[in-house]
Picture 1 (tube, rainbow, N blue to C red):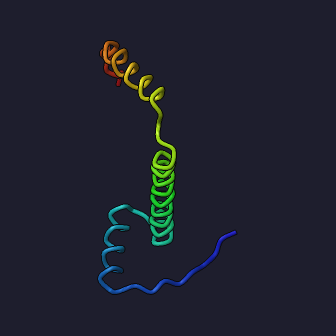
Picture 2 (cartoon, rainbow, N blue to C red; picture 1 turned 60 degrees about the horizontal axis):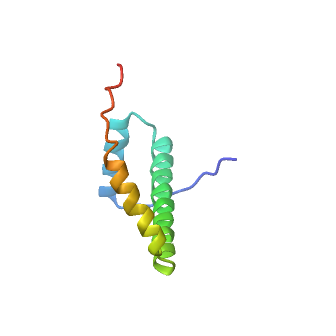
Amino acid sequence: MVRRIAVSMPEPTYLDMERARERAGQDRSAWVQQAISDRLERERKAADIAAYIRGYTEQPDGEEEWAWSEAGQKVGSSYDDEWPEAPR
């Protein structure tokens, strides 16, 4: 289902949007849809990060987790082999 909306905005914002969408080669509808999708995705990611931080704040790692982390860092650094450049 597709919904049609009307949006009011200040003239300078409208002109900036028009220049940006013309540079992108998109029609207005596609450009606005992409802008809204990008904003919603950023908000979802920010909420995920906040939940992750909140989880570790409420239940921090214990001594065993720290020991495993430190061991992994020591062992992992000895396996820093160089990766070949990807073929073109």
